[in-house]
Length: 579
Image (cartoon, rainbow, N blue to C red; front, side, top):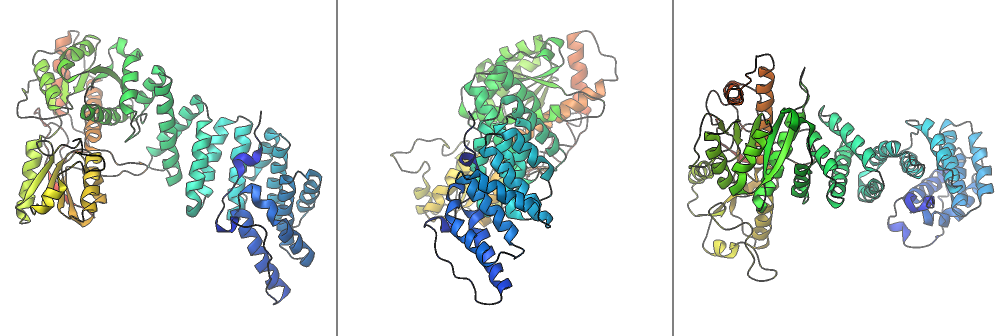
């Protein structure tokens, strides 16, 4: 059953919605100027009103036509009155006025009459005919209010006629036509529309938007729409336990929405799904670490960056597939063995100190190169292990040198080795951090080695206390530096932190590390494509490791272009000031 068109078509109500029809006085100047003022008042109120309230404007519309029947604006007023008649169920009267407007000498009146005719068709439960009448008007309407009305009507007609691909296109146009002051209402309607669309159409739209984003061409409404579509697909994959959908989202990226609470659940589902590339031995294996919130969050970030880099277009090369297996920190060795036995070209893991050290130990006698996300003083680096990250010790050293340079001697640590980011408050409503003690003791700076959520919660607590220490962020969490104002600094490395064009949320450090891992692996695999490959597994692993050690590529987290023959990715840490 098709829902009445006004349910989804109500436009936007401002302060004038509160009362009923009020008397209007027109300027007693020339008739032309009086008509102009009266028309502007009617037009503003008509397009600002929710559709069910537009019949309240009928007295004003009829009064205008009685007083200014030959004014050039009378054609537009007749169309608005026809719209009111449609809402009142007076279809014959509406059709008469629409026919009159179609015969107008003004092209704008004739085009807007077509929009009203489509609205009449929707009222008659004929959405297919309404959509067909609207399609020829794409790009023809000049007036911004009429264009917004047209965009929403086209969206409704597409949804009602189950033209879902066209509905997504109409949705993008509708968002683009919406002025900034009406954006919240439009986005709420857009989210409602997205919920009604099938998975296949949402996936197709997401792929199109991703392809466009790689060209840096997404407009702000498209950036927002891509995020909403992605999050809807993630929610459906998790709620429906749809392993295949989760697998497709992960393989194609960006199936994992940044800062989405379901990222880890999606990764677990994807890890359960089979991949055709796994049997062919032409894939990269990711040991997804679970059992700890930090590990799961970091794993999700690494997977985002890794899957994006592996699926990026490269001349003459097909995308490389990412295969995910779930592991806990102490069982990562067994998971790496399973992936290597299935034919993984290389492995990525180690988002916590424990798993990094376990994986490094496995690599000493392993059968595939392993890229380790974390660096620790205890790592045993061998021929098959490559270290991507920077240790907490190195980050703390860089931050403390900067604090000393600034003459700040009293500082406290949050995160690694300091106050816990997830500490339980002593009582309901209390803060998570000992900020009052820091303030009382004159602590001048807070060093934070923790994620975005930790930084933002700490910032909220110190602001509540009107406490203004310098906040010094490590690499994890540095992507929110711009929110800190003048009392914030953060470590940076290479192009990180940054916000690329067409991206709706800044990548965190672990996502950037995953990206660099994928870029280096693709470059190494491309270089090996023209070389003879050994049949022995150990020889193949050694060949890829040697190539990986020497290959060069443009990276995000370092100014260097690769490992440079070593097993640790060189990186110079710098200090960035909040803008």
